[in-house]
Length: 143
Image (tube, rainbow, N blue to C red; front, side, top):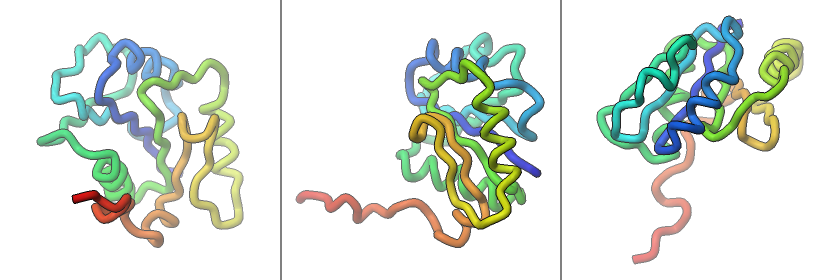
């Protein structure tokens, strides 16, 4: 199955380094750090990993970031994708177990969580059917 892992970051490069280096190589087709920090990420953070840095033109909101990730999966025909918090860390075989579990599923599924949403997998077809994340009307804005 075709899959990628996506780690967005705003701050906490020291934690990002631990997160990136905790993901085993050769599990995903692509490894992406989505740089919402508006700074250059030092290369030593992801050196010797398969991660590459995606620098958007401006800082994106959480919803925009999720929608970019979703659209990237749809446009590039990924079966599913993983999202990981930049302050998360995989200390065991959770990444292998998540992939094995997801790829064994035969029923429809949308998302599989580990430790809530620290590291999870999203089914591209399900998220394509559901549509984009949120909108700017929720939560209600006070004037």
